[in-house]
Image 1 (cartoon, rainbow, N blue to C red):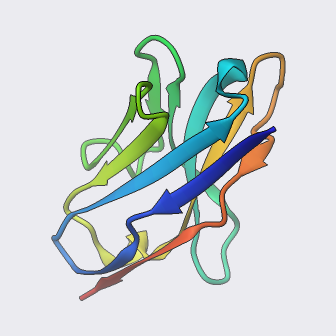
Image 2: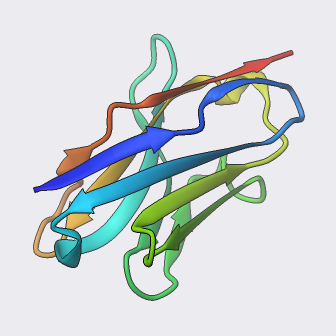
Length: 119
């Protein structure tokens, strides 16, 4: 089992920055990829960014490229999402997710943290 806890959401003005953290516990040795997803009101959950648990492979949604940075600190078992130049379209509940070795999908999810961008 893997447990994920997100922190760092809140209210920020348009153009501002926010950093989300995701603390990972449990069977961390089985980790393969970590991802951030978000779900805005009335919309489906969408992919934001992902990072390999080992190595440096990252991937971003087009909406996140150039503004968001995903990183990790394996010593702290924590994954981060640095978000810059936020706009109202970034308002959503952000979820941290984990994909374990041998799995083809993200099978573990955090409870989500609300990010609200005011214009």
